[in-house]
Length: 215
Image (cartoon, rainbow, N blue to C red; front, top):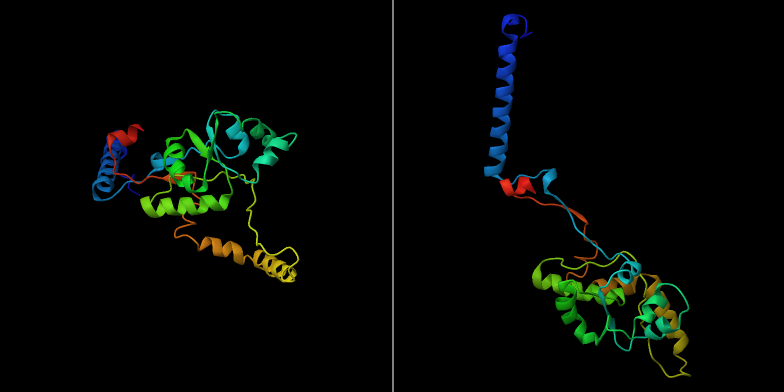
């Protein structure tokens, strides 16, 4: 309808519309920038997780921190093939560092945080350490690889010929199969689940600046 009476000024109106459109776009961008935070596709960040399995670790030169005197070390030495065999070949080299359980959090905060080492142990140990670190810093600075290898070694001790053993076995089996043991672990440390499933792609919200647009 608006084109009916302006046949002679089509070119002039075309340039005017372009100028008006550019002006409105600039006003919109500036308004969003100064009245709030501008979020766009330019703000998408991909988090690099270089180690998603033991194979990634073995193929790199990163140091490996193991729990000293753990029950899995003899298995790593005796297995005949696979990634555990390759790990077993490294056990007596300088690439592997052995820590007491009480030293693990300190190593996580220094060697692992610097990127020179990784921790390889039962995942439930990492739940507690990552939860404690999140409680202290408010950030998820560490992640767990997608692949899992070591099962949790938990046992109840009793006399060898004790008549209580069958009853203890029955109760322990029920606690594990019902998921109660797993739930107890999740409540054993504040913020224990905060960093278990961290995203690999995040959206960063920031005020529009030339440095942000440049990337």
